[in-house]
Image: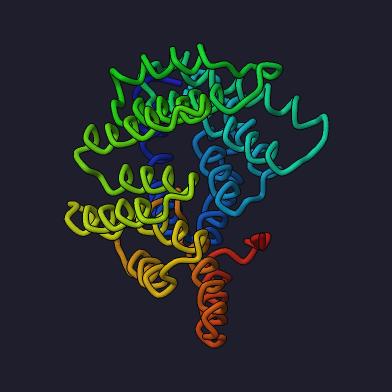
Length: 312
């Protein structure tokens, strides 16, 4: 195919997928699947469409379907870093949900995909962060290791200083050096220019170690940072609500945070609206608002009818 024709075809494909990206961001899973199914029927070799479909299934926690689509994207375009990253993420989620020897095989596949993503794009902060987290959490038998994680943290310092500090914080936690861990998570807040996300990561650290007062202080700082952000009412509010719910604290504030996010134009594909509707439903039910809970269940189903979250 001549270069001009190929470029034109690529432009057409990208324009067709733009609405899908919008659907993904606001959590319209059913609409995204419908668009992508039509697009792939016409062009089954479209790697980006397969990757986007993988990401929709990932949002819906349909791990097998997500893995299939991501594997197809990787096969069609093996040199694309983000496709390997999303395949590793999908494999990782499935590995977390199964309790058998198969989990070890999947964990090695996760490692391979994250490593490949970094090899293909050494500046991919998301891939570096996920690889560092894997090395920190995984046992040596499947390729984890402290030194490997430290090496990733060193690389991250150049491309994502805040993420580098958070990874160092996780490493210090694993070594039970909580003083150093706290220092690193606080350094991440400063490196991120006091971002809401970094405040919530610090709050999560305090939550893991049952320091409720410090957790609440960091969480409220995160809420304030979100309110001052260029794009307020983002996904950090959902993280804050989750922390409050996990610690059985301030349920009305948690409800308010989720409602602010759902009303916001600044949603994130990593925090799809239908998941937040389901989370809000559970909170309202706990507070005795059965009608409100049912409304949120209906709102989630209207966006993603195949989403059936497992209640912990």
